[in-house]
Every structure is written in structure tokens, then in C-alpha cells.
Image (cartoon, rainbow, N blue to C red; front, side, top):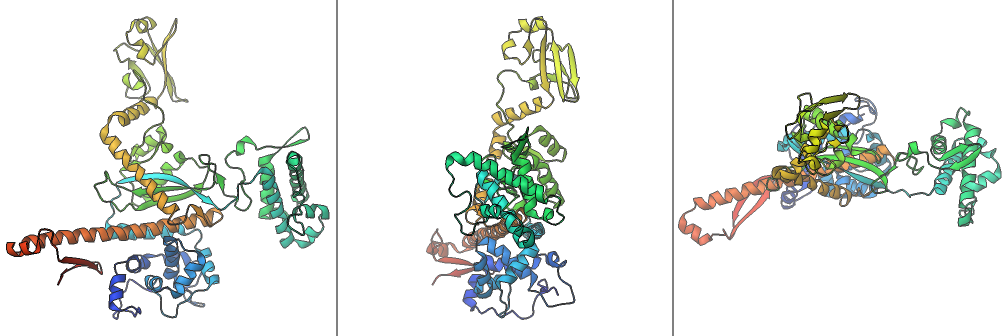
Length: 567
């Protein structure tokens, strides 16, 4: 039976926490109190409703406290054992999770609830974000988007290691699931991959000169296993057998009965990297194994404007997913959440004319430097182009265009000019029109004038350059997630588990930044109050206190300000 507290209802009697008044006052200015009062009540109980009855069965752990535990674990980069211990014995954690004195947690229960949360990380992230937006009235009209690679604890395997590990994994699963079928395999074959003593395998004593020969033999073993079990109704459904088939399809090529181990070009970037995490990919930029994280957060127009830098959208994609393909889907999700930006800052990895035009139609100004250098001399943008955007009427010197041949399929046009006029033009060397004996023509894509205009904007418009400088602040968020919060090399395998870990870390970072921003705003308000109070004093008394207001001390208590005169 699902169990949770109605934390929206205030209690008549303050619950006993075990802290004295002094400690409680200190605790109320920490992230633990902020989490208990503002985040914990908003955590979605509905993600567990599909697993438990509402009125029958043994009561569950408090659902909101369990979800909160996973968020706090990510916030402080704790191991699973550390999080379990904190749930049972750490008083600040127990205060943040609103636990009773008798609440404790076993290792089995911890993993049970985390497994149930797989696939629902986005719901938790969205609910906490919704509460934060409401709490601080988040200004999301300017946002920035960036990506980073989250590495996994996986070995970069050679082809020999990849074939050996994939075959070995299949044989182990076959032995566990179908021991009778496994016992019928040739003893010599089993000894190759599953020797009685580690280090006595078929590959252990190979010389470097035998590498090619052994690799072909390993490939033949894979093909033999596929031939033996591809028609078996049970073995062919094993996940490890599917990996064998995938490996053969990607790496083994047969021509005239000659076997060659070579990666098929159509699988470049998406081929199997390690059988222990089939979803992991190589990142083409860093040649590392992991997953690609797309992250969008709020920012301000300049450094003088304080902004809490809240993550508004985050996605975990395969490492070979190009940035340019993630921009429009990300805007769709922001629009669904009611957080669509007016201005979006990105690097040129997201740059494409299609993306720019799509965002423009949706009312989003995409500030991103287009790829390529600014042209020397005249560009296509300097020619007079009709309203349809695909025909030129005259050149920059006012000479008419004789003909426009429009290619709608390629979205390109070839414009023709008088070759005699072009030869006599003093700016012919600075003009993109190509002059031959009989023709003077300009071949241009319809997007080219827009690209040239944006390059010129980033070259000459100081306001645009100043605004774009704020994009680099997104690197700090990537650094915080990867270093203090432990996502540099993630302790999870598989796309689903990695996605959950990243979403919990992003949620935890939003909680911390919101709490810090509220503290900053409270201190600013307190400082202004002190200034007004100081100005309202009698001049003689002000002189005694001094211009620096020595003797005035203030502290933040329970979200409110209190002034105290030093003795």
C-alpha cells in the first residue's frame, strides 16, 4: 500500500527533531531546511502509484522521503552505502527527509525503490523545476544551451577484446539459462573462453604477430555460434545472443568466402563499443566512451544582473548524436513546460540555417555564430534579392541580372549577368560572380545571404558579441555536474540508469542554486534595511556608530532578518 505524508497540511504541534533551539536556528538557514520545507512536499508520489495499491498491502516507505534521498545523494555525491547510512543515522539528512525516529533503510530496499524510479527521472525533475519556478518567479527569457560528454567506467576495447568479451558474455548467460545446451558445446570451445583458471585461456599466450590470425578465428567462432542458435526459439532471444549478431553485422565482412574483420562504414559512430553497456558510444570529438548530455539553463544579459542559473531542460542522448539535431526538440520541451526562451545562446555546434529559421518562426532569437569565416569583398547579401528570397534583381553596383535559374529541389539559384559589363567593373576582383569567356554567373544557395548577414552581425555588432559572451557561463554548470557532483565518470551502466543519475544530479543542482540565490537576495534586502535604518538615526548617534556601522551585527534566521546591536 502506497504511503506518504500530506505535507501541504500544516501541523498544530511542531514535530520533535532532537535539536536544541540554537542548532535548529542554524539548521533553518541550510539547504536541508529549504529542501524539507519547499522541495520535499512537491516530489511526485504518482511515479510509484503504478507499482503499489492505494488501499491494500503492506505500507511502503514514505515515497517522497525515498525520492528525496536519491536527490540528496546526488547533491553530495554519496555512494549507495553512504546514502543508506545517512538515511538511518545522519540527523541532518533525516531532518531534510522529514523522517520519524524509527525510520531506517536496508540495502535491498534502497535498490528496490531506485529500480522502480527508472524511466521517471524526467517527472521528478519537472516537478521540482515547477516548484522552483513558482518559488522564485524565475525569469527564463534568456537561456543558454550546451552539451558535454558523461563518461562511463568502461574499458576501451581492441577488436580482439571486443570479440572475446562478447562471446564470453553469451556463453555465461547460456550456461546460466540453458545448462544442458551449454554442456553439449565442444569442450575445446568452452575452454577457449571460459577456462577453469583465469589466465589459461586460448588468448593468454599469443604473440603480437598472431593477432590477425587469432582475430579471424574469434570471428569464425562468433559466426559458428550464430549459425548454431539463430533458429533456436529460446537461445535466440537472449540479450547476449543479440549482441553477437550485432557484432557480426558491424565488424565481420565476407567476400568470396574470405572473412575479414573490418568495421562497416554505415555503422561508424554507432558500433558496439563494450558488451557490458551496449548503449554506450564513442564521442567523435574526444574519442571517449559515454553519453551525450544536452543542458539548457537560464542566464542574464550581463554579469551585473544576478540570475540563479536554473537548469530548465536536460536530455541524455547517445554519444554520437549531433548537437544540431537536438536544438528544436529541446525548444519543444521547453514550450511544453511554459519556459520557452525569447533568446537562446549556443555555440556553433548547433548552428544551421534550418534551425535558425525554425526558431525564428517560433519567436526565439537564436544567438549563435554560424560556421565559416566572413567573406572578403562583396557577398551575396550585398546583391538586391527579391522578396521571395531566391532571385537576384541587380548587383551591388546597380547592374541588372539577366536571368535567374531556380532549383527548388536544391534550394539554390544560378544568376547570370552581362560578362562584358562584369569585366569592365572595377570591383570584379571583390565580387563573387565568376566571369568566363561567354558567361558571368553566380551560384548561390538561398540560405547563403542569411549566413553572411549573421557572420557580419557577430563581426561588427558589439551588443551581439557582449550578449554571446554569456554563453560561456554554461561551461561552469558542466564542470559542477562532472566534478563536485560526480558525473565525470558515472557509476552506472545503460542508458536508462545513466539518464536517471544525470536527472537527479541536475535536480539537486537546481535545489542548491535556488537556496543560494534566496540567501543572496535575503542578505541584499537586509543590507538595504540597515542602510535605511542607519540614515534614519539621529546625526549624533550616527557619528558614534561610525560611517562603517561598526557594532551592527545581523544574521539570517528562518528566512527572515534580525538586527542586533553589539554590546
